[in-house]
Length: 455
Image (cartoon, rainbow, N blue to C red; front, side, top):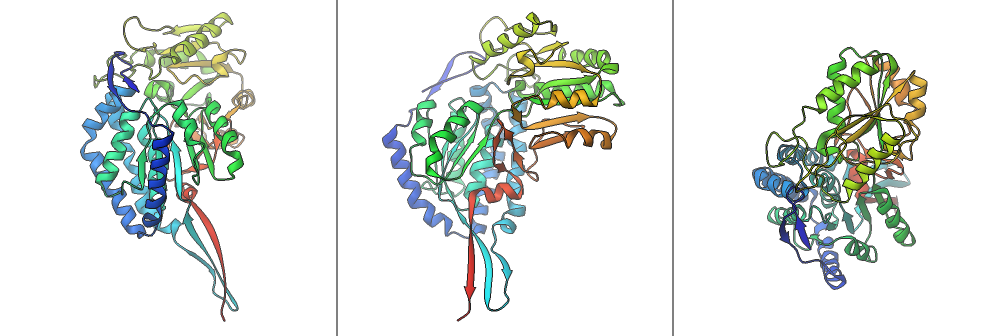
């Protein structure tokens, strides 16, 4: 499998793909290792994960360069992700013991009652390329701490990073028969669905997540899907600093080239501040430096996947043909690499694809609304349910909007944010199940009820 640099279109490496035989061999290895791993004290498992985090931080520069080379993520953002993902390990050190410990519910005669939490066994993690550290840690680190073994398939667009996870987990003391990396694209992912494992945890598109759920449904085992979004932001007319709010909204839309499931993809602005907000927003976007992702000043790098260029261009042309006004961007860059200009479209509406279909790129539509009721109606007009945000000076007013959102996460005066303290979950086409928080720790265990009657 060839690894292509999306900024230069050069082949930078090649990896041998797994086949059915190698997958079966890795699975058998993990089945054997999981039993001994789960018998290790939790303190030992945490110690290994902590050491892994230390090794990653010590090698941030090298690891960031690898991620930037294969995904096109601007190097400063790669560094930010690697350093920021450490908070998952801090979270596990803080809470794993509390939420994995036995719970004694009753010690009153004649029957004692308690709950124990046992690992699932061997789990499959099919991961994403856009934030491989963040979304990967959410699954495989939490699974390992809970006593599971992990068959980890990174995206084919982040396979070199996936191999680095394997390298440093092994160096940190995680046995080789407890974590194994799988290399390949769609066909290899499909092979994983036929294996005798105890859970599937996927991060990626709605279409792929739906197929995974359908394929493994007959197994009646845990399946968790973290899928896409069409995340709305509503800017109310009571904001005090239009420029600052526009800057924050633009970063929420364009960070990581807009390639985030929780990126702001559609913006609704109160009519009486609409023109001022649009002007400030466009002015901010025009300052973004686009180009070589190895440059520390670059904010917009190439798209990771070449095929996404056509998706974005189709959405932009569709919007323009239906009356939207292009304020900046709107086309691919000439030359090598999968570059698309940061693009802002205004006077949009819900007849346009840009306000309905996931973009996953550096484009955003802005629509004028008359009042909170219209904003709510439009924000709810989606098949997705990941996040929703409101910028407002009034918490009470914002809260009235946010409580009506059918999403797993809501934001007031912030956006595009994940915290290990809070559950990360989707609704509708954004998936189901939770990572992070206490729920994310317990996502990788199964409860056993104990009824113990004294003789």
